[in-house]
Image 1 (tube, rainbow, N blue to C red):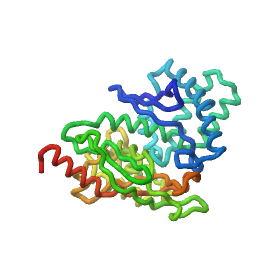
Image 2: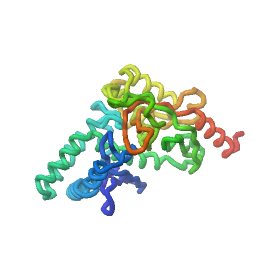
Image 3: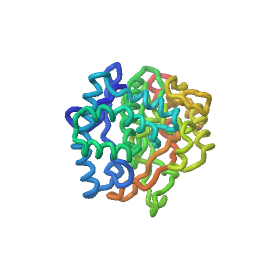
Image 4: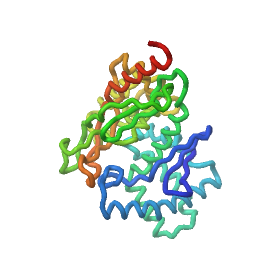
Length: 320
């Protein structure tokens, strides 16, 4: 997965060898950020800085990198970060450190003024979620390669918009199957509680769809301090996800499970047969606009949309 900054706009672009492309915006951090519904002069000021200073420095640095390499190979960073305590959904401490180690030499070479260079470095260093959006775009490219395979019962999209949660299945093309968005069992930032929380929201569940994130929680016991639960629960979630997935990933390995591959490829047949649905970790938005992120936690996908998808699969392929 080669990562680049789009030359025409401040977004990350990921591309695989087959030419599939996916894009993601630049990560603002946590708390009062636009992607969680916050709005104000502080939010706008940060977005303007990201779209100018930050974007320009990373663009120049990536141009320097591409003199030597095809691009930033972020799939390799994910694989390494999983062996260093990340899950690569709600914990990107190792991945962001690896990103810094990769990019800083090229940032220095690109001739940017020292003051600006330090601004960009301080932002990345102070925001462990800088690389979350790179991970999401990487995951999207991976799942695109698995989509629209005839007779496949593998889920290739899982997403939530704060009102509904939905899936798409490889063998069923562009059809969506939805259920009401579930509530998150979370840990709350000071001053907030479950009463303030919006139902589950976000497109970051693409990480679990691709075989990391919450499905790799056994690799990231320290994530519990962010999303709640216990280290034993993190292990249990990963073990349970093996029961509803097609395979173990050959690239993404979990040291605490004797380097077993992460559970990859949610199969709607196994979900319905076992009664187990995907469990992910997620951030939580305030139910009112303008406030932003108020916590993080764990959420279980509803069963109904998997049952509906399996019924549709039977009708589509003449099995019922």
